Structures are given as structure tokens and as C-alpha cells.
Figure 1 (tube, rainbow, N blue to C red):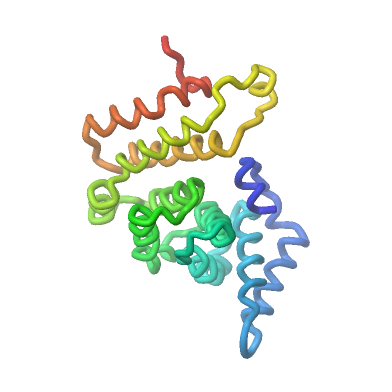
Figure 2 (spheres, one colour):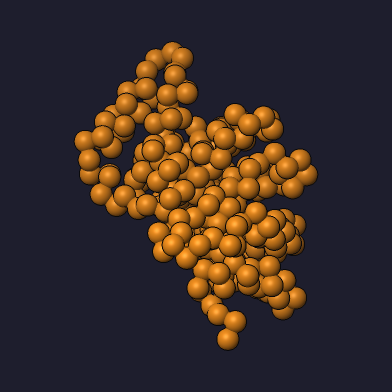
Length: 233
């Protein structure tokens, strides 16, 4: 439910006030309080539901959910099942609206996920984009040391340019006008839209070099023109 909610860009602002949402929270609390071995698979599933379906999540609930979700995203196996688990958990993390202070405790782990993928390519395209968005959309992204890591060590511009170019090759640009009017989008197109959001954060928060901007815009131009965001004129 939560995965489809985020992937289809459907915002459920009122879900937090439903009986189902309260039921999920109670189940999480009961499982956490349980003495002895806890059902981690159940907890992870419940945390993913709460975080991806709720528009707002309390700091108390997120402080419980974050470690369980992080445990999933730190998995490094490259098999399809694990990659899917990691993808869903990263979608949940990047979707959460309350992160200030909590994510600071695990910032090194998030950076390490990106570094590991750059060497081993263990993440899906959506999972990789979600990791960057989580890192880049931290509240008050004004830490110069983190900016140095993002810009120079993790080489965001180079990574984003490559991902956008690869995704653009997978999009069917010949879709009919009828399909466009229905708002139907493939997964690659959705991920490209998410990269544009991340670029917006980068342009706003980081000091830029003109050659980096040019490279990113060239990689993005065909897609943003196709979306009607800009025109050739």
C-alpha cells in the first residue's frame, strides 16, 4: 500500500487520523514492548506502512521506525528479493516528513550506502535516487562539511547526470497523446521526476560550478521538455 502510494505520487494527508493508522501504531507499540524476541519482519512491515502512508509522522514514532528501516537498507545482497526490500524501506525513509535530529544519528550510515553502491551497484535505480533524496532533503542543509561530502566525495553531479541519462534511454518517448492525457507514467519516468526534485534541492543548497550545472541540464533537458516544464523556445 505504502509503496504504491509513494510510487504513484498519491498523498494521503488524512490517513494519520484513521482507525487503521491508529491500529498500526498500536501494533508497533505492542511489539516493541514485548519481552524477549520481537517479530522484526512484522515490525518492519508496520513501520513501512506508517511512514509511507502518513503525511505527518511524530518524532516518537519515527524514532522507533527509523532503526528498523535502517537495518533493512543496510543489507548489501544483490539478489532481487533483497533489492526490493531495500527499495521499499528507502522509499519509506525518504517519504517521512519528520527527520530533524533523528537522521543525524545515522548520517554516516546513509552516506556509506551511497559509497557502497557506487562501488558495487547493489541498489535499484529507485532505491539509489531515494537514498540521495533522503540525504539531500535534510532540514537546514547548511553543514559545510556535509556539502563537501555531497559535492566532492560522493560527486553528486556526476552520479545524477549518469542516472538521468540511463533512465532517459529507458523511457518510451513515443507515447501517444492519449496516454499523456491520462497521466500514465512508467517507473523510469517517475524516477526521473524524483531526480528533478533532488536537483532542485542541490541547486538551492550547494555551491555550484558552471560546468556541473551545464552537464546536469543537458542530461535533463529532453525529459523536462517532454514533461512540458520548459519548451525549446
